[in-house]
Image 1 (cartoon, rainbow, N blue to C red):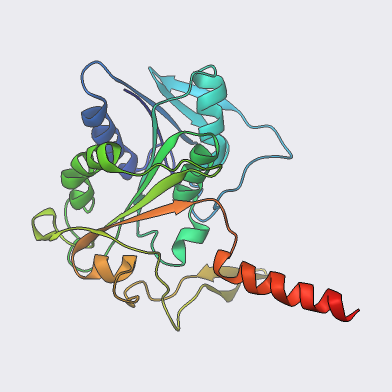
Image 2: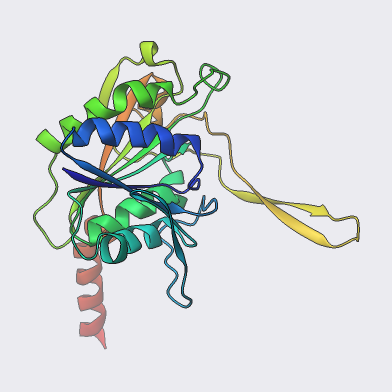
Length: 267
């Protein structure tokens, strides 16, 4: 198996080393693992691509490249330049430092890489490690992902539904904020929503008197509804959320058509 790995924390991030080990275990002794990751941290860029300016790709070692672009750029660079148009069998993105559950999913560069891989018709999994009091100060805060990651990826390859329509399915995985031994299992979960918390800005003044704004996130340990990702993670389960790139609100589409038709009839 040929696997392409990337992340949004940057080429030197510790989570990428964890993902390298996961990918090597999944690929097996006869497989290939290729790394194309951002040269600098790209957290929060979502599915951004460098559409209006070029970016440089540098070879750092065998099968290891750094790109001056976003995670989605890295996937494109990996497929069409580094691998010379010979697509990988699987794209893995992460392991992110912090959760990409609930509303974080929409901002995540880690998930953005999986989005791009899916749009390219390649199976993809985004992996993130939830942080909390039980694992933040561990010698290896990625322990849960490192211990359980390869087995979960193999299970998804074997039993996962990757879709048959125009927009394929990819998977968003979040490991709970606990030690590997405290993980209770795996739960299929919908994307949740943390109520009464959101991103915002905090103004600060520089020594010169100029105002700068820092983006601030909300409380990450507010739970979501039962059956959703954060609720599973805070209950010590790995959450697996199937996703696709079709953003249509299908539940609202039929009603909207009827209203528009009625409006046309009145004109």
